[in-house]
Amino acid sequence: MLIQVLVTPHVHKMSSGRKKKVRQYSEKFLKFGFIAAVHDERSPFCLICQQCLTNESMKRGRLEAHLKVKHSAYANSDMNYFKSLKEKFEKRSTIKSLFAAQTVTHSPLEASYEISLLIAKSGKNHTVGEDLIKPSISAFLKTVLEKDDKDVKAMPLSNDTVKRRIDEMSEDIETQLVEKLKSRKFSVQMDEATVRNSEALLLTYVRYIDKGEFAEEMLFCKSLETTTTATDIYNKLKHYLDINMIPMKNITSCAADGAPVMMGKKNGCLKLMKDENPEMLLVHCVIHRENLVSKNISPVLNEVLKSVIKSISAVKANAKCKLLFKKFCEDNSADHVRLLLHTEVLWLSKGNCLKRFMELFDEFSDFLSDTPEMKHLLTVDGKAHVSYLADIFEKLNVLNKQLQGTNKTLVDAKAKIFGFISLIELCQKHISNKNFDQFHWLNKCEPTDTAVQVIVDHLKILASDFEERFSDLKQVDFPSWVMQPVLVDVTDVSVQYQEELSELQNDESVKTLFNIKGVMAWLCDETETKYPNSTSFARQLLLPFPSSHLAECGFSAVNDLLLKKRNSLDIIKRGDLRLKLTKLLPNIKSLCSKHQAQGSH
Image (tube, rainbow, N blue to C red; front, side):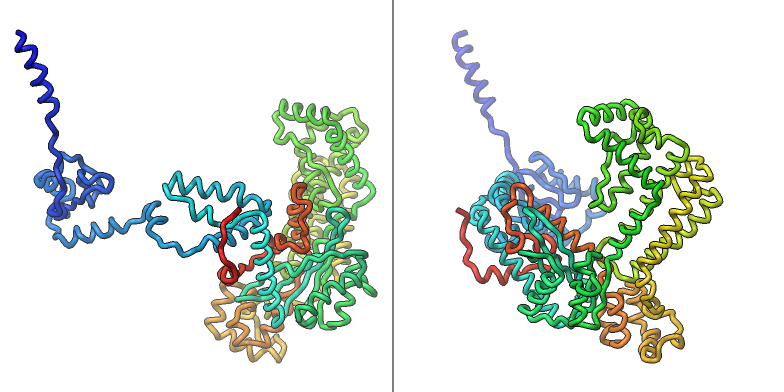
């Protein structure tokens, strides 16, 4: 028994310690479509179905059976076929191979410029490079790619470094822009505004033709140190053009708002520019004029508008009242719980404010039923009037937005403005016949004859004011051959353009351009080369800015940059604004060649 007890554990130990046989991969298995698995060389990997088998299957018979049963169509394939599959598999892209296999072509210095450009585009603080971007890249490299972050640490992204990079790239872009403007025609739009600490800024945009497209860029942003007279503004522009050797005669047109300092007939800035360049076209911003028309409402409708504004202010002015109204709207399952205020500076706010008021009209009628303003709006005529105002200002807002944006021309503006005038005249007839289908909110009311007459009178005022304010635009002649050169009857065209247009209408290459790009085909180099006279005339009509919208957007960018945490940023001298607004790309490789990379401190 003692012997049995002593021997039995020994036998058990020997049996449990017996090693399991591990089969090795052989190159001969490739003729069955198998290679050694990348993650474990002891496992066979099928190149056809990309299935990984166990080590027990590392036998000729089992691998051959797998090929014949699951891939019978490839059973008779030769070795060359499977070798090609192996090569393709080894050349496949993976996350690690994308980063590890490629040679480094971008230095940390170049990456520093690229990231600084992104920081400027986003308008973020310069410290975000060291505080967020570098730690984020390091975390990604270590966690996902399992790589060292020494190159990231070597990348200079300190606050001062980012600032220098931004200034250098801004200067490079400005140099590119100036070189382009020295040798080509361009149009200008200008606007001046007051920002922090009552600082007056002048912002100027240019539009020129580059590579068959419109290019719109900020020319400069300058401070008006003392006064903001027309002479001050003109001198700023003239000085900038002179020091950069840009001829004033290259300016084909200038657009600005209707402020006397800009558009004054005797002493306005644009008048001073035209005195030096008589061929220049002066454009009063169409968006500004449209906004002036929208302010022209009758006394009856003005009282209704005031009642709406007072009702909204009654809720918004008091924090408790505002919270109670929000809770009241939630309890009534209203579509909205927030009110929108009307501000004269924000031109679209009037339409948005009225639309939201009508969407919450039932809630207002219950919540403020005792106020005199709401009692006025709850009358039959009062509700009809406010419904009409919400509808007409929504239409005016749509027109305003259509006049905004990049690459807009006077052709576009004229079509939209006079199309809207035709719509107003059509609405007059429909409303006179008590057909309110074109007015969403008014169609839900039952206006009295008195209310209908007030509405018709207002539509007449709008149409008349539009006609008067845009009379100059109506007189601008846009020949049909400029819009449709392929379809126009050549005999109806001026003699000086007939020869070129006759050839153009039989030029399949240029006809294709017009079919694809429409009137913008006049901007293409091919059109200019083949038909210089016609192209020159067409570009004179297309190049002018119809509004000062881009300058307004530029001031919005200024306000975004001058946040509370960045109120010490010198928007005039620093390059942040130009990089945020530009579409040009800085020559980073050239800038890098002037520096020696150094790590952040």
